[in-house]
Image (tube, rainbow, N blue to C red):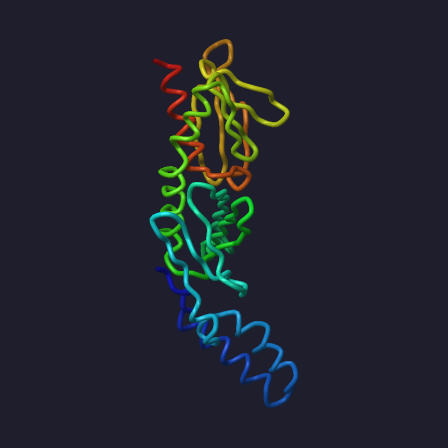
Length: 224
């Protein structure tokens, strides 16, 4: 279970200061600041403070950070997309932004963000749970000659496919890696030097960890 993240003392004090400064002279702007800005944080809202992210053996239950009824999704049907962004402002790193878009056919969709504390823990847990729940079915689909879609990319037993690129046979795949929020597929040119074949944002791929696990398995089988 993961509770909402609490504000740092300096940020908490800044919000209180801004509200107190506005209230005596501009009542309406002060109230609007509290209602639309401060109440977004669990520190200033009991309702937000009561929200939780629950991870279970078979799936997850989460209160959307934006409010609303809890959403329940199973790992074996979950479609998960992640966007992790680290900005550098004036040479200093800003807080990392985590956005996980989770959905399942017929069961709704929800965005899970750094509103919940420890996203560097629950994010990989969700991805790994998807791998455990869906890897066997994905490999069976590939074994019988099918294709498994992963958003911008798809995999078959013979090739990896990308929009506008067609398919790259596994014997020609040099490496599949994820540097800095990008999914890169490398091949080689006629002289044996590495060449970039496909370059996609990680957030464009569904179930990224499952994609990597299956891709590495197929690559190893081709090499063998």
